[in-house]
Amino acid sequence: MRESVESALLWCTVINYALLMVWVAMVVFAKEPCYRLTSRWFSVPLASFDLVNYAGIAAYKLAILMFNLVPLLALHLSD
Image (cartoon, rainbow, N blue to C red; front, side, top):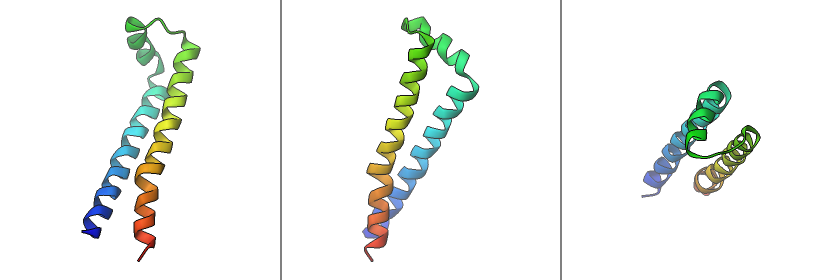
């Protein structure tokens, strides 16, 4: 049972970090197309768009650490 929980947490961490890297890559390398797409639905200035993405990336990274990586390390270290 414990090994399956560790495996699940490991895969959750890997998948979430992959999604985070895709988000960062889109904001860094395709900022203008992302902004144009978003500005069709919401009237957001570019500075606010950058701020929302930066804050979202930071919050998502902290959530990955808190809910996936820390429990994985705790299970791994409690042998």
